[in-house]
Amino acid sequence: MPRQFLTDFAERCKEVEEYLCLIRFYDDIATNKKTKLKAIDHYGNEIDYTPSNQTQQILRSSFYVIVYNLIEATANSIITSVLDQINDEKVPLVELKDRIVILYVRNKLLNKNDKNRINYITEVMKDVKKKRHVKIDGFRLNISGNVDYDFITEILKNIGCVGRIPIDSNSTLKDIFLKIKTNRNELAHGNKLFSTNGSVLILKDLECEYLEVKAFFKQVLENLESFLDTRRYIDKPKT
Image (cartoon, rainbow, N blue to C red):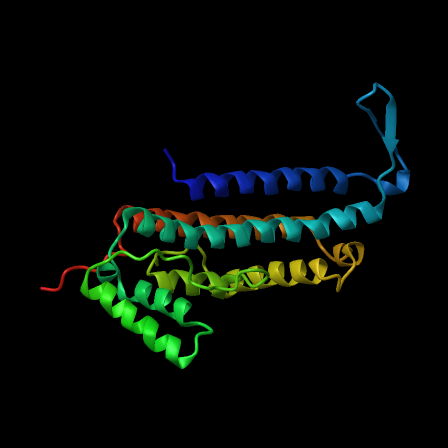
């Protein structure tokens, strides 16, 4: 049975690809012909809609909102899948890789004053000494609206889940992720009109960008599956 993060990723990709089919359909309509699209509503009545150039532009712009949702959700699932497995297995703190412990402690010390920091570090030392499991509830990473190529690769490096990435030039992939994040944020925050933004977008470019993102995450999630299967978050006994 596939892991949940693989299933979730596949479902989100289906959503993006279904939306791309819709964009292709509308992009092929000669809007200058003023042809009406006809359908039947739930009551059996005939209804129609006349697509416009503005419709096409709005649909193209909205692509970035949907693809960014795929990116952010996948970044979040990378983190939660590692935390869930560690917590489910109740791995003692002393057995975890140092990088995982550092993320855990850094999260817990955030916004604590000096006295509370000392008290907390003392408790961590006791947990280590007694080989206790502690629930890791997060790494306090600000994901919302911030996910790009560097953000994701930094997460992977911090967790220790690294591997081959199927791209000839990382600068190309960086540019794609940055473009998606920037467009999404400008649209979501109302800095740009969807129609204005969509007027300069080319459907073929959108399709190519999505395929690059999909290929990148496919490899990342395969690396993650191997990372979890081989329990590489566990520190090897020193000989």
